[in-house]
Image (cartoon, rainbow, N blue to C red; front, side, top):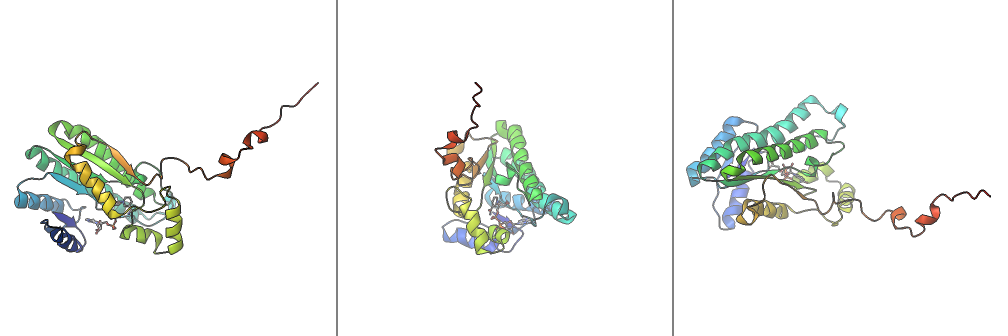
Length: 242
Ligand SMILES: NC(=O)c1ccc[n+]([C@@H]2O[C@H](COP(=O)([O-])OP(=O)(O)OC[C@H]3O[C@@H](n4cnc5c(N)ncnc54)[C@H](O)[C@@H]3O)[C@@H](O)[C@H]2O)c1
């Protein structure tokens, strides 16, 4: 099942079919409870059960400091990213419990485990997704529903193009800030989501998995003051008072 507010969901179905699978597209706005209900209902009608779900719908909102963010943008980002994820869980979990279990992956972000200056609504929504994931995971683990969050760094998608405004220099700086020296591909992130839904990840429950090319691992060793061999010689001398 492919649910998306944009008609591009049809193109995703064609891709799945070209790869030998089958899928149907149900136009869905995740902020609308009736549409999310219809999406999960359609999955049950078509396949008789729901084994896995990836909740990836998201919006970045405008770049603005906290005090200058318009109310409408705050409300929209929280509605899609956080409330939308909750509405999806509310439909998916009972469907999985009914068929003996399943796995759910919620798309959070590194902005769900660290602050993100200029994007506080986005970071708040993604921190919310991580808290929601952990709480729901505790509630339903015993019934066989595993719920985890994925926290990517920068992924080469249309969202990233919007964030950089298509500016080559901003993109270069973004890449340079990643220890691995490149952006993630959508396929890499999708592959990890598929793995999290599968049997080899059966013991992973309520986890927020950071996938960021090393971004949050720590500070790079590039700062000259860290590498300088003469650092000790800059220590203040003890004054000799004879
Ligand atoms: N691209 C990145 O660098 C990055 C990093 C970390 C996390 N993420 C997260 O990964 C997820 C996927 O992002 P992406 O990079 O593919 O962005 P994208 O903009 O390319 O795709 C987001 C998708 O969500 C859909 N969508 C938006 N509002 C919706 C709504 N109300 N109902 C249903 N669908 C809706 C859009 O139509 C689009 O297909 C998002 O949750 C995003 O926050 C992205």
